[in-house]
Image (spheres, rainbow, N blue to C red):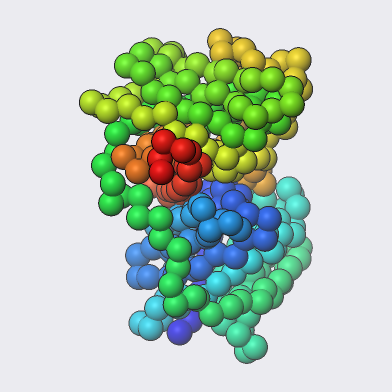
Amino acid sequence: MSVHCRLSNTSLMLRVLHTLSIGKDSWSSCVFTRDVLVFHTAGDDQASTASATIPRAMFSEYVVSTDIPRFMIHVPSLLDALLMGGSGLLHSTTAKFVIAYPTGDGRLLVELEDSRRTIQSTLSTRPVKDRLLDMRFSDALAVNRITVRGDALLELLADISAFQADTVRIAFTPTHLRIVGLDSPLGTADITIGKKHDAVLGFDVGDTTVCPKYHAQHLLRACGAHRSAGRGPQAAGGGGGDMGGMGFGGTSDGSGGFERLTIVINAERQLCVMHQGLDHSIPALVNIVISSVCELEDL
């Protein structure tokens, strides 16, 4: 099995990899099919998963053998390899970013090249596990959904991070989404997002509402907020705070995240965050699923 591909949208691939990093030491399975590259990552505590589907349209070259290549790769190392050339190479219109597998010793080759230099990195791989963690989110009915501009949501979630909340409770009503940061030594962060706010791109409560609780770090990682700098406790707690831009999606290293986030809660109180750009012609999508905190009423 072998693969040789050349990225045509490096910044989008970097955003995908940053979003997949839901653990301190994330290893992701990579499966190269004829039409898509699929990533799948499990959280360190086995209570969350992240998956991404990258269409071959993101590659200017995409050659895959008939026996589908699949292996595990260390996500932070792959990110480092793609960033090895610095911002100059990332901004270059003539640079080539090539991924090939396997090398002679079974590693993944990442090659960056422009008119002046060639940088090669070889990364260790592992066999794909027999059974990948599957949260089976789609098996349960989706009951509540909101689609929000990514920069606006992360601006508000900065309050949760600044207050060092240990858990968060999420509640949908017919008119708004409420996120409350709990179990913090600094107090409570209470955030409200109205369905008619300019940053809200879609809102569907349905006939059933639930009020599940989640670990705050799980939610922040699922939304990509663990990469955002906190604003400090003095700025937190404002449900009607500034929802202005944060340069979201604009960083060359891909750490800015995606422009559109959809939060969906199902009947089993699992939460899924779907990451997607505003450009519908680029369908690259990352889904992150987290489990709720078990409470007494759930037993």
